[in-house]
Amino acid sequence: MRDTVGWTDKTIAAGRESLAGRRRGFRALFPFAGPAVVASIAYMDPGNFATNIESGARYGYLLLWVVVLANLVAMLFQSLSARLGIVTGKSLAEQCRDHFSRPVVYCMWGASEVAAMATDLAEFLGAGIGLSLLFGLPLMVSLGVVGVATYAVLQLQNFGFRPMELTIAAFVAVIGISYFIELVIAPPDWKALAYHSVAPALAGPHSVMLAVGIVGATVMPHAIYLHASLTKDRVPVHNDAERRRALRFSNVEVLVALGLAGLVNMAMTAMAAAAFHPEHAEVASIETAYKTLIPLLGGAAAAVFLTSLLASGFSSSVVGTMAGQVIMQDFVRFTIPLWLRRLVTMVPAFVVVGFGVDSTRALVLSQVVLSLVLPVPLIALILLTSRRDVMGDFVSGVFARGVAGLAAGIVVALNLVLLAQAAGLGEAQ
Image (cartoon, rainbow, N blue to C red; front, side):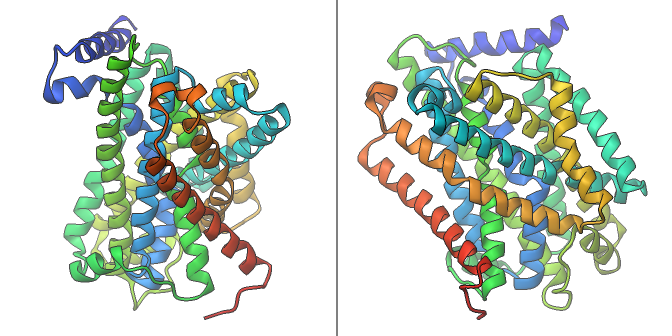
C-alpha cells in the first residue's frame, strides 16, 4: 500500500514543480495527465460499440460526421468541466448545489442518477457480452464475474488517484491498439471516410435515432460530472498564475485523450463499414458482428474485437461507478457503501438478460436515454462557467459562451427531432 500511495504523492509533488516552472515539456505535463484519460473511457464504452457498429453496417461511412461532431462537443464540455474544478476547487455537482434552488438540485440529481444507471447498463452489459463470447460462458455467469472484478478494481481508489489512472490508461491502450489492428485487417475506404467525416447527411428516421444514440454514447453526462471532481483538488494551486498553468496542462490533456477517443470511435464505424456494408447491412448487434467477423476476416479479427469490447466494458463500468458515487455525494451530500452502489447498478443488466431483451437494442436505447439527459449538465456548466461570482477572472468569454451554447443547442435540437419522431410526427424518408 505504501508504494501505491507513494505514486500519488510523487505525482502531486511533481505537479507542484510543474506549476512552479521547474519542469518543462512532457515532464511538466505528465503529473496532470490522468483526469481526461479516465473520462475518455466513457467515450469508448460498449454503447459506442453498439451505435457505431449499427451505423457502419447499415449506413457505411454516412454518419461519421456525427461521430466527429460529438467528439468535438465532448472536448469542449470536458475542458469546461475541468476548468470549473481547477478554478473553484469544487465539482460541477457541488457548484449546482451551492448556486441553484433546492428543487432544481434534486431534479438534476434525479436526472443524473437515471443517466448513471443507463450508463452502467451499457457498460456492464457490454463487458458481460464480451466475456461470454470470448470464453463461451453463459451471459448471466459473465455478468457476475464482471461485477466481482470491477468491484475489485474499484478498491484501487483506497491507494490514491494514480494507481486507478494508470489502470484505466492501460485499458485505453488495449482498446486503441485493438482498433489499429482491426483497421489493418479490414482497411477502410479512406476517401469515403474523409468525406463523410465533414459532410453532414442523414438517411431517414432511423438514421436520426442512430445519430442521437451516437451523441448519447459519446458526450456522457457522468463523465462531465466526474471530470471536475477529478481535477478540483488533484494538485493544489495557490494563485492565479498556477491556475493558468494548470488549465493549460488540462486543455492539452483533454485534446490528446479525447482526440484519441474520437479516432477510436471513427475506427469502430469505419471497421463496421468496411467489413459489413452493404452486403451485411443487417448486422445490428455485437453478437452478430462477432459471428459475422469470423468467416469474413478470420478468428483473429473477431478475438481482437472481443478483447477491445471486454476492456471497454470492464474499465467504463469502473468509471461509471466512480461517477455515480460523485454525483450522489456532491449533489445531496449522501454516500452509500461502494459495494451497494455496485450492486444496485448491476440490477438493470440482470433484468435485461433475465427477460430476454435484445442486449444490443438495450445498449442503443440506453444511449438515447443518455442523450435526453445530456442537456442538464451541459446547460448547468455553461451557466456556472459564465458567472463571475463563481469563476472570477477565469469566467468564460463571449466567444466561448457562444460556442458552448451552440453545441448545447445542437444536442437539444437532436433530442427534439427524436421525440417528434417517437411521437409519430416525423415522416419516413
